[in-house]
Length: 393
Length: 164
Image (cartoon, rainbow over all chains, first blue to last red; front, side, top):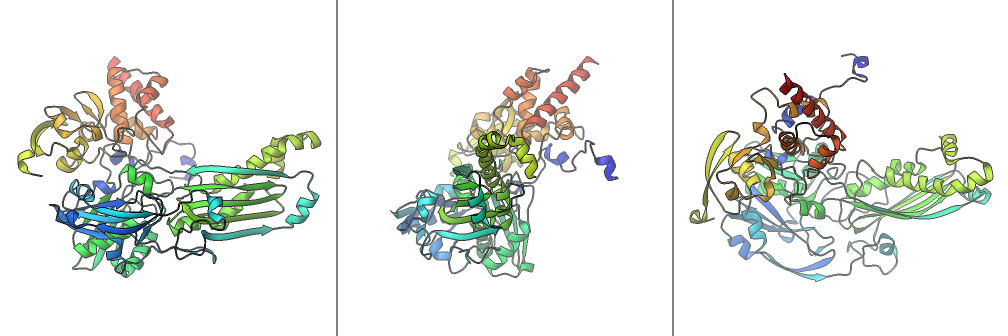
């Protein structure tokens, strides 16, 4: 069909006939024979040392096939890799299940594999964990101050990365400015919530030495690379299938611990394994982000602190250090002199949603400053804020 | 679970009788999905908030994640798989397709069945009545406008059909 016929036309989607009949195949809809069900015990603490884990009762529970803890499997499966970042990025050791200490509420501690869907969470209740709670820091600016509790033991402080963007002569611009507006902005935590929680089904075909992973993911290709690294398989041995995905909005843009864990369990147990995230788990263990910072307008100078998760995904760190996000500090308007500084630190939990994707934070900072300039500009130059916006484009 | 503690349930689903021994704690949505194999009914929240698991139970829209299978013993259920007549889509399904009433499709079965209950009770609802009726069903993709359009279009088509 020529493009001209599509413009303004109502085009019926090809995928809809199956979706409106309930015939779509989301991860939890896919059933393989002999599939085992996985449930994950999660930390109730934001920061705590794991003193002991008692799993014997869970192992003895009828229908339980395996129980694994972070300490037991840490040498058999790699930590979560990252796919990029600038040279200042620190990547925390993110194990698929916590080893020695937990860094956020909802971090996986142990997993139960059982024959039936309801048996796995039954057995989770039988696991006893003794924690020693550690100091918690939940404010991104406090996390930067000297003496703040350090979340990742292997880091000297909580700074995940620093990133500076410089353009033009900022000092001169401030010196010559008619008015300097300084604002403190706190952006609410972004919480992308898809109606379908995450889920993973993994199947290892030992005859072909091939692992197939179905995941409710937005990034099957990256997942394939990361799984091969974590499980020490060649990429040819790993097949990732993203079936119907019931919404993502960015929080399925990360490779998660559960994907590595399920791949590992499928290899180890040689049976298909399935994990379906519950909503409570989704709220605890799927990534969110908050942002707060100072912003000065004229031309533009800003310092933002992105509050990433304690352990959360290195890929989430990548987002805000991406120069494209920093350029969004320009809000799409032409600015002559720019200094944007972003720093992320392990602290609470974080993520950017693709509908916002950092751009909304940056645009908001820009727009709020512009609003602040409105009164002054109108009075001194007789220019409305709308005109000012138009002239800047 | 011990076989002795299981309960027998007989449930009519989309016109077909099903009898199974189930654990008393088994949720109706898991009965439909795992025992019967009808996976069109989705689970979004397990707390009755999102409505993805909505089905019709004896002509009333219910959230099957908070009904036990044993509570549905003897009931007549309609799930999304039973709404079309063979290859012929229900007017609501046609309208959701035409009006772009879905994107990812995860909330869609529940949304359509909840709208189905509305049109059974109120064949020509006003826009605010549609929005009120679908209040218990969440969609994260569409922003709802096209869903409301779809229900209005279905109501209109069904009304025309009745007049003929």
